[in-house]
Length: 113
Image: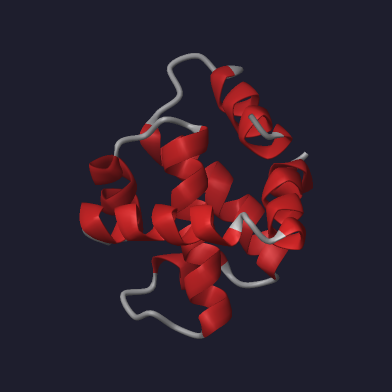
């Protein structure tokens, strides 16, 4: 398991009764910081630029894989369908074969500390 996903799990488990919106807010702030975009762009109903779309996919991936939220829960928080979240997770998994992208995923949660 990579360090980024482990860090997100440990950060979100450190607060008792962590709610889905709190987890979503934490991940959104971290990813927005990493990609240097406004958090509101992650929630926008439109796709946005390629950078915004990728940032949203990474945030959805970390919420699902890193925090164990269901596809439906993640979709609800981002205003997307669960199938869109599943696709985002597939895209991120495929991109993780690129070492530099994988390192960014591993380091993303550290930005929030």
